[in-house]
Length: 288
Image (cartoon, rainbow, N blue to C red):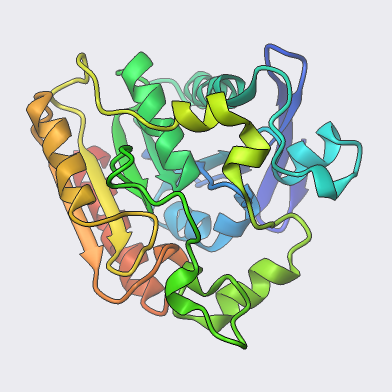
């Protein structure tokens, strides 16, 4: 374990022998745990500002760099950053198992504390899948920048199509704040991801699906998105919420920020988003 910039770096080994890079932002006297699951082409340390806000509210935060991403991907591919995004042996299901493994580590370190999953974009698609197999994995779930996983409601084409112009950088879809795209482009561990090429056809198709049976009726779910997030189409998020309600989940909330794009944590109204998310988490799992 190493201390760096307010968080602790550590690692764990998954069932295929891949070393997973992970991070802990520790609260002094935690009232709960928030686990962060990042998106494709993304990595855990981009969530530092949100993690710090959570620790300030009394939550210890855990996050990993998923298979093929961040420092996990750098080590997996022996420093060849052109190979980032390739998940390695076991593919998507191994990436999901490693996320669940970190949940177990958090619970072992903090017995009795509730664990909230904050899952963004690709991370949110995996979280939906994990929930189907392990319905009691978490005590609350936030799906950020997500989609109803159908061909009709989830965009699989050019996410920046709406912002195409001669001077576009290709990442305007992330946020209205141009600094977000600039930072993403400058980050050697961030990349534009073609999921079909990186994951292969079988794993790409596994990302599609709908909520199944067995989800606890008392699991709080928050679906949060920007009104201009291109990943979701039409009324997909309302349909997703309804699909969970039809499975018996009583507390499903949809929060859409008009004009915001894909990364609400990095939007021009990020302070409002942070406050809303922390309020929802505290209301659901905070100390009584």
